Image (cartoon, rainbow, N blue to C red; front, side, top):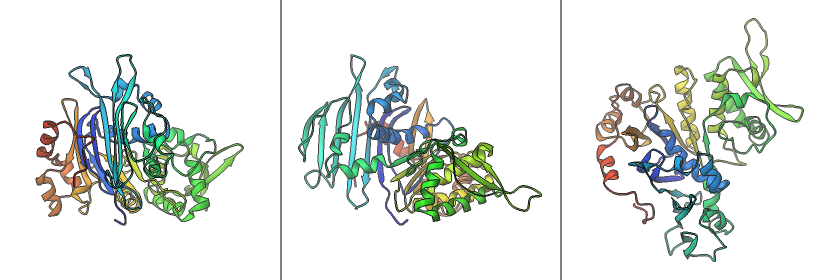
Length: 400
């Protein structure tokens, strides 16, 4: 890989179905498990951080159904939840950001603790917030309240701005062909939105600033949908859409079709490819999280999709969920790039592969896809036991 992972370690406590989680991420990481195991909840925890910073904590909680839907319930009793992200910035500096949120007797909530440290406490910028009060900080802090994340206020300081910008530049995707098919209002096209509702603006933006990216998207699209010869942004009055060139039996030249006439599979494939290849000289996401990119694709397209995932991860960190053996049918997939996700008693557990699975992959005895078909792609039980024996540490010093 030509870059280091942005998010290096994720620690979660009581987030949705995840009671305890402490994992490390690679430039390309596959979250692998059966439907309903809780893979999406892991992605959503990172998405929650982005939403809470780029919008508001209140909106991030309400969009997920309220606090009772975000925090995990234990033995019928509500619990606090927390998230810790250890990161490496583009300039090479490392740090960590963490917070936990608890309910109030009045029915509201508060940020109980929030820490951010770059380059180690005493070596670089840092702050520690306790229930809306600045306990420690390298900077003179503005006024803050316990119902909002303090990093939003701290983003006004040059010292903390890189952390804020990096965390809000993460993109998360579960593409919706219905919304991609509709006429769209022109929008900011630098970053594709979660369900693809601004894809025409993104393609238009890339046509202006990075036409080679559009050509790459078109080439891969033709690999997974051979009848499609290309597409471009098209204005229709005050709205916009995409116009596709598609081969038609008996026609000498490709016919043109608007997005509203294209299949769900073609539109979803385009959305996945655009999400993965949208990085350009003008703007690049720090992380791309994508839900089951193989959905609606023919199994024969898995190799091409896997190639795009690898190519994208050379420029942007990629985190993808999957339960597709076809997508994982590659002997060159690094065992460290796979996190196994299982659900036991309604509790989502996430860990690296066990020693037996890793050995078979490293010796090329089986591919990850073959092990998944045999139900042998298993999490490391020793790691899961360690996680269950002690409460996840959100605010300790980073481990080497």
